[in-house]
Length: 449
Image 1 (cartoon, rainbow, N blue to C red):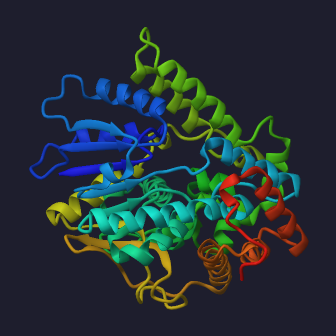
Image 2 (image 1 turned 120 degrees about the vertical axis):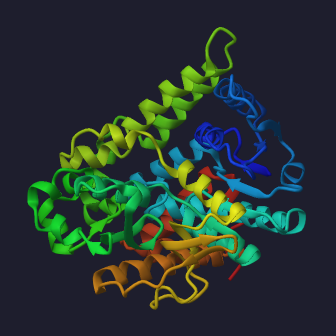
């Protein structure tokens, strides 16, 4: 079975490869093709993968190419983890937004919109090529903003594109641990959009254990979200939000923390990964050891500004191991071998969440089998969550409209409608600021409607 990884020179590719190396069953991935536009990055990551596979019999054969059509042809699965504009683009997204006093995070608010505007056209081109060159392939999308990009690709691939994210997985795992339950045996009632969802229940052997957690302040404050959001606020919500909702519920504090930081997250990762790729190519260094060390630092500093502003302390050791690669492997196994399972995924709504139309991509538990991912029916959201979900989905639709039409007016509308951008004038300045730093946004025209 052939797996093509787009963004194959990306830093997190060894996580996926490491998961593949644990799969010894019949029907496993036997060929991995890495695609990237940067040959240097491909070479560095290939070195890491070779060390990972050392001594493992029948490890998947790994090849690398800068040719997209070559990489896609004949693929059974396509894993998309591209970053249009690179980490410099992310740093620019953050800087332009913070200069206007609004959040510049890569998937939330102004930064997420800017990232989406330059990523959607590329993702659409990939989707069209997959439909032509590998029509039977399943696309697993991890490219951010994951829900938005998955919805853009679904217009060409239908239900054969599925978005994944490790945030709901990690959240469900932490809640289960706090309750003394086995995360593998728990059903997490999670619903929302990517990076905008809530856990409303955690059922073990048919019993919802979340009320017990919410009623116990000590237990509720014992894990990361309890410390991040505060016990009182979680009890008021009657649910446990995805960590990214901290940007909404504590927006002023988050923006202030980002403005005070020595450098933004994007700038930190840009500099850190530049060092990694340089070191990983040195003949006198173990590329795998360099990668392990860099990853540990990356995970430990994740959302550091938010944790600092909330006094949440350091991350738990159990949360430093990633997770999306395990979701990707479980998803591929379920489809390729009909190993039925339940995963929280980004898929087309169909009739799962009544407040959105059937084509809207949402993030909910799905039953997965050889026929793909099937979202379960979920109970309606409370009004406060409904408002946020509808507002952000409306913004995503404006981003898609702008990307399709090339309309600068639609791009301004997308920024202006976002709950974390509080002024039409700010939205106009954001568009101008992003046009100055991102050549990839040159397609936005004042004359297109």
